[in-house]
Length: 484
Image (cartoon, rainbow, N blue to C red; front, side, top):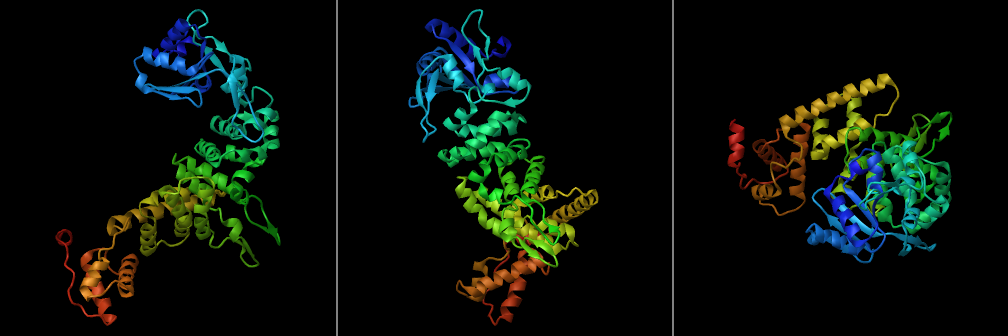
């Protein structure tokens, strides 16, 4: 393992450990990632002694005392280098109380510390002390073998491991999803048995793990495990409500839970954006609430896109997700996700395309990615048909945008212009005229430029019985544009 410890910091740690007569190890994810051949920027250093004092000595040796952050409450210290973050901690053993996942911590041995680790693949350590043992692997739970067989397993009894710290259940599923590993059977049964213990974990920590599952290459692996163990019902019941198929008079609807997972996996092929992936998860979230059976048309979910968009803020609050522009993006994509699909099934008119561009704005490309992912039919003919029609819609979007500049549309005539022209106070009539202009542009009755819009407003204002006092001037840049 020596060849993997070529960063200068390991030599410094080794020298300081020798000088202070302290045993030091690199442990956890950095060691695991050596075997997985993955780059790692986070290094956990374990010492048999005071981790903070040792970190202070190392930082002083390399002249980086100002970059050392000490967390006295946790007995840890973090040294930030240019290319690594090195965390120091003293070996410890832990005991837990049933009502909390915060352990009672005592000083411990290397064995104590490895015993308390979540999984065998994270319990491996490499000796850093100078001499013949430098680079020696300490792997008491055969983590290397579990890596080879792609297995998630706890060092000790999984029933105790997951009961003591229930967040480890989420972490087990996250690692299975990220690494495409399997959770060993005894461990999986223990998660199912202890699932209710997740209630003592904060929503923020649960969602942090959930987001890591969503950001994995194939998130359906994680979601299927969350569903099968019963955890998903406890942390995200709205998604579980999508599960199941109902049949009346021999007519069934598709299982919207597994459809959602397919859409999620599909969109992961085209984007790493967490919020686009959340839009895929939530695009059909209101189908259970809007499901109806019609004797003629069969199963319908009318208005599920509108109701789904209105459900987004509540779900974001529940999961402690950000209530900012990220949430607004997800809301918008859920609300609009049917629009391009409908266009792809019908004759595409310029007016319909203009309205879609107007409503989607800068998020039109994200919306089209979601709609592509939403096509989950196994019928090859239908797939080719949708693909061909989507290409037609995308070309129309491009053509109309180049011609009419509707994306992120700003009205060519403002409310102030209208009030000036007709000597009107702010009120209903101004709003009516603004809406008439917008509708005329979207319908293609007039061009998206100020001169035509002003002429149109004069005409409509006169029809409404208004008197034109002062026709709003055309800005110089608009005159130049029209002249061209």
